[in-house]
Image 1 (cartoon, one colour):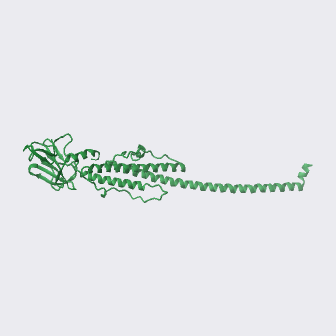
Image 2 (cartoon, rainbow, N blue to C red; image 1 turned 180 degrees about the vertical axis):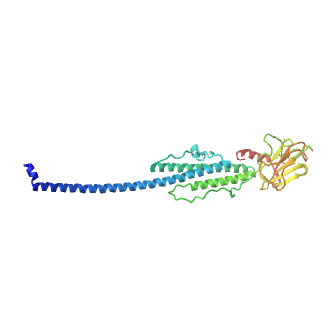
Image 3 (cartoon, one colour; image 1 turned 180 degrees about the horizontal axis):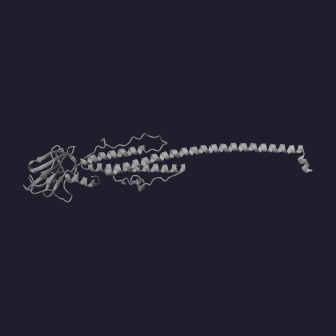
Length: 339
């Protein structure tokens, strides 16, 4: 009976009609699901595109920071060649790792959030390194200036120097930038170079080897010939005949020849009214008008002029007034690391 009913054309048509409606409903749902899947795929592709774009931008920033690391290392190398010792600023070793070249390269990172965090760390390390470098240069400059001020010399730190580098255009606040820190380093190195130039012209170096001792100091003493009190305008060093005599600082030779009781003598003008004098020489190796460097040989010690035996008479004169050379030599000892 049931089978007959099912096979009856009307009932069979009814079932077929219901199945058709059901199939139509299923088909409609499948279409909707396909549209949803397509929409989700489109969104996923868009997100993947955004991530790819983000990764591309982060990789570009990584390349910029890597170039900045190399720039900092170059500045650090320049500072070391100029005589600036890192670590003087009192910062931790971590802040100076970059400038001493001990940082390891960034590992290869494949996802944007981790790479972004690594880049922020890398940028902060670069900044700390530049700050440490600027501080070290500034401390060194201040030490030189303080040392020279003890003998009445005041370096002009505003002097133009050869510090420079490639022009890097400024970036917006959102972009990775070390422009301010790099400019501070360039300024600090420029001032340090100016201080070094002043140091080169300051007569604070011993004109004889360190093992040679002083036989007579600056000031009143008993004259070795007349045996009465007289003013001694310099320092005498017990320099055996033939000892190389060297310039206490860079300058220009303004006298080279015989000068009465001084015997064979050399005067060097160091600027700012400062002149050094080297007397009783046995031989002179420079001439008037010659530019000499600090520690350049000027001649050989001897006993010419009013002298009781081989030695070097060394004077420092400011505006033709003799001043105590020991103050200058003491400043030189304090600034040995920069000489």
